Length: 406
Image 1 (tube, rainbow, N blue to C red):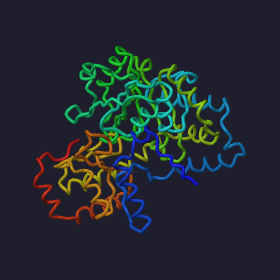
Image 2: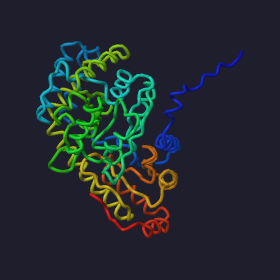
Image 3: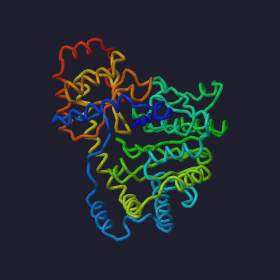
Image 4: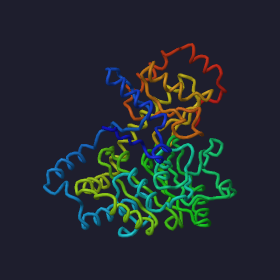
């Protein structure tokens, strides 16, 4: 019988695996062999669920209708609760029925939002460096990814004047602040310019705010919707994964332009089965407990942030100390981030994310996260310190003296 050969689609081949995905595959093979790998590359929170919220979840899951698909009345209650939370957190009033939409997490929202508003051949602005999800969503929607460089000299904010000078401006621009991978926080002055620029050129801004509730000072990050006029040109995506340590719940919501949210809702209705009662009930309860949960989480992330900074300083590396977001963006003397990340994994059994996984502008950097306990982070840096100490000394000697930033 003739063998049927079915290869991956052209669009899937355009996306391809990133360097981080390749490293994670190596890590998985090592773990299956019994090797203990410390993962400082991903941000997969291990804080555990707030005890009172967990108790609520257990009771909610016991209800006979917990896993039934949500009905309109519960969805309306969720929209109202999200609007109430948004007003308390940002001082921005939203119309629950038209400006708030529950989603099954940010990944789903990004993918189906691209499907809902991007036509084949449309230019889609993708920040570089950035999380690979945005480019993948644009490709699968038939759009043409348009690189938007983010430079350290401009604090990893897009150069709007340069975008103005391009022959073809994007129809949609994906951004996220606090930024993955650099942890650059939102900037009010830039957001004001961004909204003006988007209104002038009729560009939709999709702002991924997944890390907006992780911060280390008294001033929390602002929402893009804090800027007057933003609701006419923007959709902002919020997640329960990192704010409440509920990554497995896969829940979030989108806010902003009603017409765009209507298109997203139509795409979700046609291509997904919806969200069950349990998830929306847990989401509403989590938002009611926001203050206590985020305060405890950020205190712990602050302790971890201090340990990572100490470890990086001991190695003599230059880095950006985050004021918001969970990542350290570490600059290397040479653009050998992929090779070095592979050696850290195979020799020291420590996984870090190479900057090249986030685009060409990320080459020459490593990303470390605060997703592990302080003692585990210390153990990881002890392993790195024992790995080729002479090589690490040479790296320190070739460094341009700048110290840590931030």
